[in-house]
Length: 147
Length: 58
Image 1 (tube, each protein chain N blue to C red):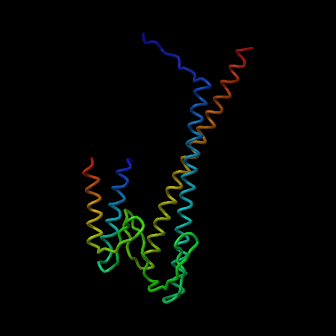
Image 2 (image 1 turned 120 degrees about the horizontal axis):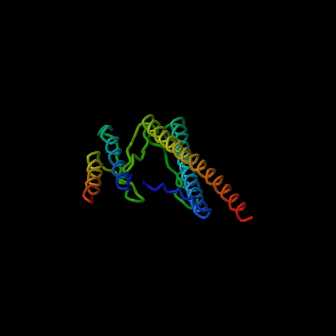
Image 3 (image 1 turned 180 degrees about the horizontal axis):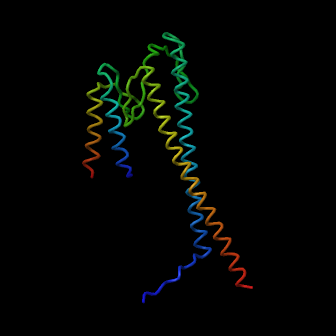
């Protein structure tokens, strides 16, 4: 007859190790979301800038930041053409509409990624709460048996 | 997904976008700080070379 092994109860130490793992995971996910939020904000600024430049029109003088708080004067030659990175080290000249569509797509994919990460955080939180509950129960049992 | 696979996918995506654009547009390759203007064909070749390099390393 096959012996039925009793399921080994995890120790509080094992549980707290697992708990620390989940907490670290939550922190890493939060940091990743913060980076995504920064990127989304940058894309939104780009949309605003493209629209403003288009409204201002050709020939306007602008100041281009060149670092260390220094700026260089330039003139807008063609506000209807925007050079946008299309990834892998390549940038391409797009029409304003194409550029806005491309940026909107990037924002949408970042938002989708953000949602996935948020779901992962919720999952990790649930696991954390389960582990905390288990730790409490084991603590209580140990307290009773030591009396 | 492996980092290499992700890079490969990104290059394929960039190639797809590039192919859809008209030939008379300006294209640039990022060399670090500067963007160098290239033709559409040159940009395509650059990406294909990058892809081959990745595939060759498997």
